[in-house]
Image 1 (cartoon, rainbow, N blue to C red):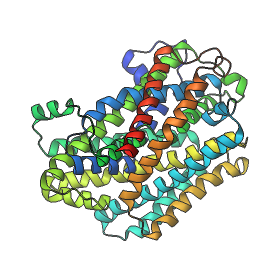
Image 2: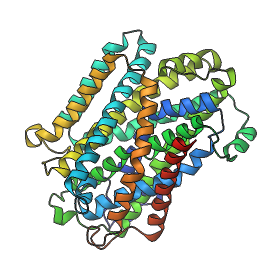
Image 3: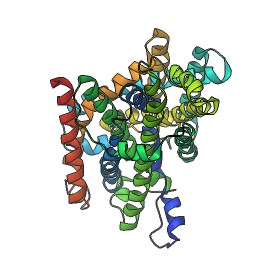
Image 4: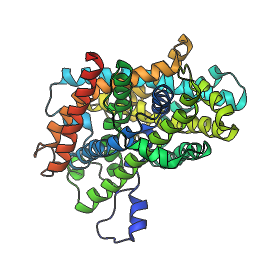
Length: 424
């Protein structure tokens, strides 16, 4: 799988490509339909004023995800398992419940966004696609082996380049964009603070923390390290490879955020279209403003990243519950070997399907689930930082001082953004 053999010395490019795995998938999953909707709202309502967030959040996201990856790699267990060695079970269960509720809302809105996009492409009722996508994804996660799931998700990450291409199709003035991208301004309105919290919540999101650490355990199991004792610790080469992987995933995630905000700012905002009700409205508004190809790429991208993100959302909640309650778990397990683990995945998806028939505004649900994640994330980050500093849990390989400082700053900034949203 993706963990390198310490004795091999491949070329730099070959090593980089071989290193791509959990970090790339997690970064790509960050730009799920929830993220796309949130960035589209930011661009439509506020124009290019928040473009600076893309380069600002890149190092923060990379630092957080690398800390989670390191916890999984050197402790030999997932994030909830590591947190369970520091915090009482009731606290972890509360986190699991909050995570599952937020993820299920996210799944519902992601399915709705995917279904709307498929409806635009085919004309078939969106309700039909909600059911088809939901059942198909749940079946795939339960029945297909981890190795095949990981490979499919990695290739789906390529779909995100649709949003980079879309931005070029609107022919921006790049010299003007360059200036706007570095123009930082302190948020002044409640709307701006809410949007920043939502962007932080969908970029540095709790479900990504659990998925990243969980995938590190899955990767090690896939190369034969089935016992916890054999998974403890990581070589220097393995850690460097994962840094490249996580860095690539975080960069992809944030560059796509930049181009989505830019595209909607130069099309929707520039033409006074600031109130978005559904992702379908975004796509249809792009057609006369940016052309059929731009609309087509936007909608295809929503479907593709939804297929990538929903297993991540459902799986992260299942990992959290399984590790907290000491269930047998893992995507390498057969259904009869890990029924409670797979039950969480299936229940999350089925509940998401059910929510879509309650006529909830999907974009607003996505936006506010991102805000909820933005409020939950800093508390969880404080716990992750506490674990990452523990020499015993981290098998003598705690996170570096620089990584700890970066995650500490991220935690404080997310607390400050949440405070700003309520204080303004």
